[in-house]
Amino acid sequence: MWEGGDVWILGGGPSLTEQFLIPKEIVNKVVKKELPPSVYSDYLKPIHNCHVIGINVTFLIGDWIDVVFFGDSPFFLRYRQALLKFPGLKVCCCSIPDKDRAWVKVLGRERNRPRGISESPYNVSWNGNSGAAAISMAVHAGAKRIILVGFDMKLSEDKRQHWHDLYGKGVYDIPKKMMKLPFQRHLKGFEFIAKDAKRLGVEIINASPDSAITQFPKMSIKELLFDNS
Image (cartoon, rainbow, N blue to C red):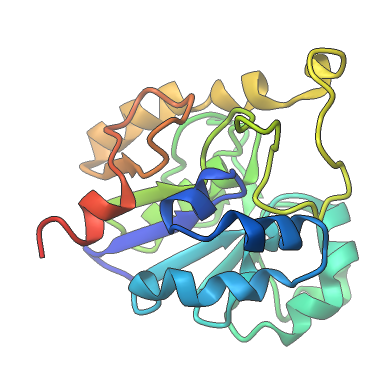
């Protein structure tokens, strides 16, 4: 589908809005549900014509996103109606009702390679989270360079886990609820992803400069899109 091209994967980390210079007052209104995520779309215009995978609710930013990828059945059930209206490709690696399999592409979670990058076009390596699993899908689609945005794997300075609050979890009370945060579990797969990417000749860039993921080169959106133009 995207043989030899770049693929952007947009995650849920707060750095997504920071990297695309979205004003904090707009972000705060999205977090408070006073504005929809689609208000971010204009700020992401530099990648509107790129190949883009949106993780989970990221697809709500705009119809220019090519693929929505998710790995949780509760997410599907909650956002089914919005997913039906989304014109892009819907891909998941979780159980969904049989009646919906006509319009959602279901990939299996590879048991023999739970971490890393699956080489089977029918499976993904789960790696414990949807963002990391989507890397397998991008490789299946022919990506030779994958750019990760919003892959913070840590809280922001103002204690936010996401650039939105659409999952209803709110701002975390630190350190009281630290044990409930998923970051350490999510981080475990990236060492294996990096090794597989090198073997497969796929470059991965982390456009989340303050990310806890250390296995890939880090660049800002400014460096990626504007400094070499």
